[in-house]
Image (cartoon, rainbow, N blue to C red; front, side):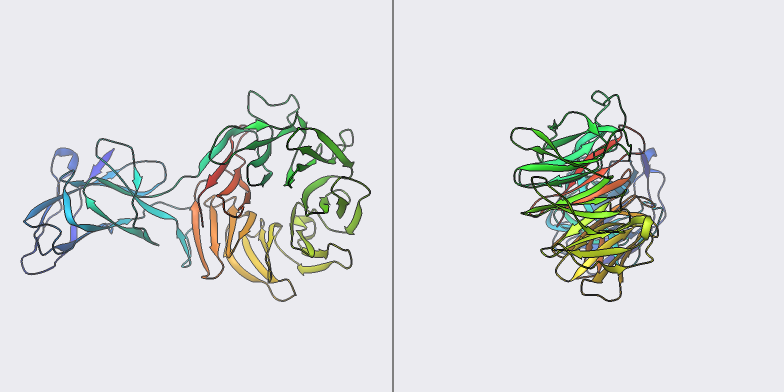
Length: 458
């Protein structure tokens, strides 16, 4: 760890004679010299060149007290700024001391004025790496303000997402019910099928890492939807005529598998209480079919590559990808297809609420919305290469596969974006079940680097 002392730029007393400053820049702290300040019962404010600030309120101490500061460059996971060792270690105060911890992380893409990192203040004793998050959390673009009743180590940081499954081969599809999170992947290095295009359907209880395979190896599972009794998935061999693409399901209780239909090249699946809907990237159709199988009905032709679906009570919504660069809707009962947006940049993830359709563009990095009833689109967020979308209440979640490799929460009421995580290795799909954490897949840059992670978010 590299320890650095720094010059204090401003010292403001709470009253006459309340603060004395060290004056000149101190020697490197690793050689035993630390910046020292003295504060008495009237309190004071200390601000350093890098934005670090200590505000000691009146009455926090009853007698003159020396304060020492060491800036420690540390690579603690989730840290987005330097660490500060404040002394004397264990010094307590009668009133909490306010700290401003600067954010100094270097980002590939700068954040705009309405976008902030989800940064907190963390603390740990000098001889421990057991960091805890402090309760006060007033984050802004350049730092976070917190408070403490004692001195130890402090750092601005983000909460790393929790891995529920790791070292999987390119996990993509996600679904959830009240008990399990379901995902599809090519398995782990010890369980990977001989055919690298094959994979499994898994389930894991949120808050655990006990992953269970629900199916034997199956060709290229790529999309999931779950109801009370079954998990449905899109199965296919990369449009391989020898391995027909199919819509399949597995019973949650018995793990009995069924092939409901072999057709085209199934890319996506969703459903409701009576029907299952799926997108065919070979025939470029959107289909509707009874939950137990049967003759599918074409709801929409010329649908492009419908890899992402959304629904409400009346309609199915989808993006056509780079094949058409359009966003569509069609009534579940059938009828004319409506083009909601066109000339998009490879539209991908899609979500819908009572008034708007939301979509993410992988090509130009925009996240947009447009009225369901028709009208001009509005830019919500400009990213790099946007992938998945999930909507919960008035918060829209998105994944960015390039630039900062980040996951965002967009407050649609306040028009504010909070970056929840940085450095995610190819975040693909994201879901936000009501009353649960937010979950997303990290595909990984290489095989067996994939993860399924959870994050506690509003």
